[in-house]
Image (cartoon, rainbow, N blue to C red; front, side):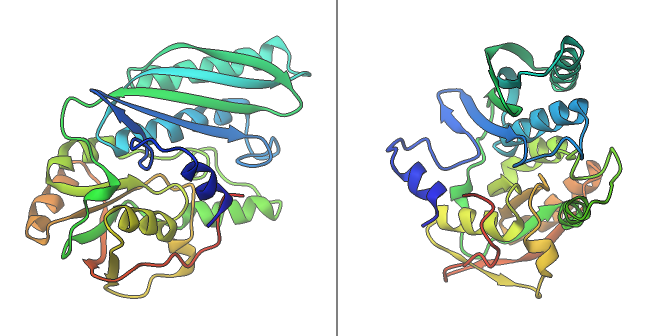
Length: 274
């Protein structure tokens, strides 16, 4: 068991285990975005850092078919930051919030050596909640968009190279339109934050320890690419035509990788966490 899984297991709430916690009509989600762990200053501007930190948190709400409503932002601010830098961060937090109809309602700040951002998103689910735990035997397993770009771009950065300001690693493309229209036909889903293989293992474990019969072998650069924020989901094979129509309507590429079977699935990628 990883230290992350061990730590989470210390808490007994049944609301833990999805992209967000469902309490009543709301979904609550939180993520951290930390200097020298999730980003480096040599890679990203403060505008890009604020933008991505918001988007990866909003992704969790969308993945559960919830509409983000409010955000609370906690920041550890480096002591050397000046007012211009603080304004750059706050401006982009607000820009992204406005794009998704979110109101920033509070948070907390403190001083430190490195920049760390913690964002809580409070979202409303007027319709069906999409959990990880709903996959069924025989379901088709698919993901949106393309995978592998983030791994390629991160590798380039780690080697001292550069990537474009609108690249996948810098600016995730959330598939909100597809998720909101398709959810009523889906059985299970989550966003791909730690890689297709790792997140698929979580979804299948939550669904009763099921497995995957893959259509074909998928390259490691695809299954192990984290920071993608595409949508992973399962659905009844009889709904394939409907799902493809919704994908076409929302201009969303989908790739079916196999079907759910009665065997345990094992992640073949290294842990992204401590």
